[in-house]
Length: 139
Image (cartoon, rainbow, N blue to C red; front, side, top):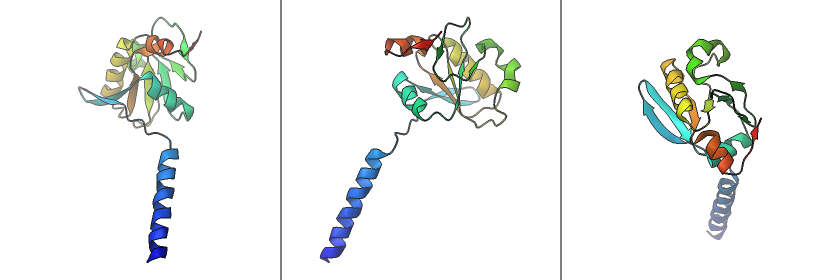
């Protein structure tokens, strides 16, 4: 009985340690729009996501004023529908959008949802919030 108890305690301690070391899961805030949802993340969440970046990050602001490091593309928010050839063919690939404050990114997110994309994310507060948090832009 003592060996089983000790084994159980060791197992629980190991599970707690592994859970504490696991990368945080970012789920964002769900935003309902006509045709589906997109997820909004704050600056801290995006910073964590960029540590192991595995998504397409698109600056949709016009005119261009600078990029967050690791930005993959610059597509004007009002030309998303005309730029489908520059977007992932798979509609469930993760795409994160941002702009200066977040208005243009919201419009672009709605456009992507309308085109059938199902894994759309957006940075709340845009590059304004990014810089206010002490991060820089590539100019």
